Image (cartoon, rainbow, N blue to C red; front, side, top):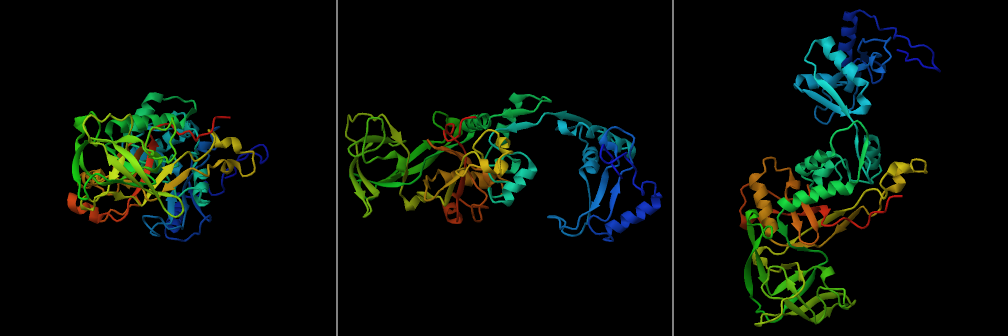
Amino acid sequence: MHRGGPERGPRTACVHRNRPVQESLDLFEKMKSGGFEEGEAILRMKMDLESGNPQFWDLVAYRVLKTPHHRTGSEWIIYPTYDYTHCLVDSFENITHSLCTVEFTQSRASYYWLCDALEVYKPVQWEYGRLNVTNTILSKRKIAELVNKKHVFDWDDPRLYTLPAIRRRGVPPQAINNFVHTLGVTKSDTVIEATKLDAFVRDYLNETAPRLMGVFNPIKVVIENLPENHEQLLTVQNKPRDPSMGEHTIPFTRVVWIDGSDFREVDDKDFFRLAPGKTVGLLNVPCPITCTKVIKDDNGKVVELVARYEDAPGFKRPKTYIQWVAESPKHGSPVRLDEVRLFERLFNHPNPQDKRDVPGGYLTDVNPDSLSIEKGALIEVGLWDIMNRWAKESESKTDYEAMRFQMTRIGYFCVDKESDLGDLNGTTHGSLKDAVKKVVLNRTVPLQVSNTLKKQD
């Protein structure tokens, strides 16, 4: 068929348009059995060439594709097009309303035409404006380019906004529903700041995610006035001031680890955490500690702190409390994390498309610091409780992202699918830590809005 146009003359029909039906059926069977190579034959729908709507100009229904399919392999070599399958699948599945974006408005008439031609149930097609999010790309063609050029891992890279990607990042479906519910439906294209979606994710996880203590760049602290075998089991609420969320138990021992950012060798008036001679509280621990000594390696790096447990009567309550993790092999503490992946926006500016006139286009706006990886982080044994609950309740055993929690003062995290959790079926609390071989975490959202985003131009 010649589609015509100002530079190509009038629209004309394909010379095979009026071929006898039986001959078309024979050729279609030949297509199915491998008698044609890709591009040598297609099957069209006989529609209305006189219509002003291009969606009636004998759309393609089937074509030859000899690339192996990820499910059926090479069993099939002919495949239907979107124009042919969309309305029929909706009909077969008894869809009442087929929702699509406004660029498919012209397709509504051909959608109805095929259902009528085949005399099958006809759903209603409704169009709405596309929801765009800042600092990202939603075009499938452009995402494919990002994947092929190794700017991201794959289509489910947590920096993307495909459904598999935000799922892998740990974004709960309920948070997405809450976000979309506030926007309403319009036929106008809408651009929403990514930080607004993050706010809904943060609000939902604040109500549902248990709290765990974890530390990055850990520094060892030895509490000198506690005995070598000191062991105290502390019962900690999964969410402070909310008993309905349950509780878990953690050990407190003579040796603990604190976050590297919670110590400074040189104190100043604006720093409220640990420093030489300074006292801070340890979250959930009855008494505070005071730093009495700093130990460094040959390169001058701080490797250990010595502290005093301030359990004398009448000691002043500290103003600041920091997170910590106990050293207790008996309890499997700390849990050593292989990787913690911290994600920022994939693009520096709200609309990467603004770079389309720049050599290299939108790819020049890719944020080189969109991913940072923390190695050697530690987390408390409450992680075993979360994994145990998931192992008992999860049916698929592939939804690792359902293991969500807040790492106190740092952000919300989930377990990544690249973790190796071993055989968790039927494990008990005591054996779970032996089954897990590798733990990788993804940060879903930080506790506060990131300050690394560039202002809008």
